Length: 247
Image (cartoon, rainbow, N blue to C red; front, side):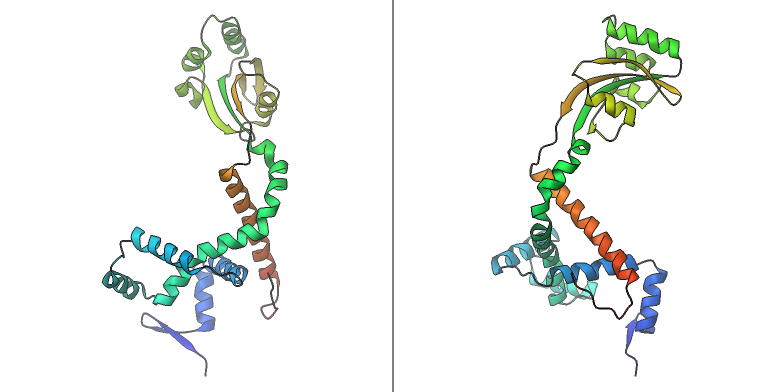
């Protein structure tokens, strides 16, 4: 006899549940969860870690009292064991990320550094080349501050900030702007450059070279994990349902 599960007033078979998962586009989320469970299966946490994580969860959700916890479990249809597994899951995932991707972060950082560098720059853009040339000379000769010229004449959203943009990753601006900023010295003003329908006047204000600090390390480790997980999900979809999987 096929096992069924009751959801609301309906008795559903496993095949029907899977069909609903696909219908409501929950399959990627389900597959992601399964793969994370597989990846973290060999990891454990200490009793101190367990108590600390649970205490933090209870505090954040105002569940310090046992009665409140029981009411929450009842309302969510969750057992105490399931809750603990769910709350501890991010800690186990963090341990997996540290072990699998931590040693790869430094080389990944070196490969990605040019896209992690940030710049603060000023920009004026107009559609008339003659106006662009006149504005360039005003700024270049110091007749009027760059910011004032941008506020008065720039035809993009940057006019609201006196032409100032950033700090922003160096790979975010138009590629031609990024190339100019890469070889600029702070304060250097570039003559009008045509970009599509615009004529752009550019000045580098400050360059922020990327550093492998704790925040950047976390960002890169998460990127490595997400890339790995995407590959695992694609592989799982291609494999036969009965195929064995390993992490």
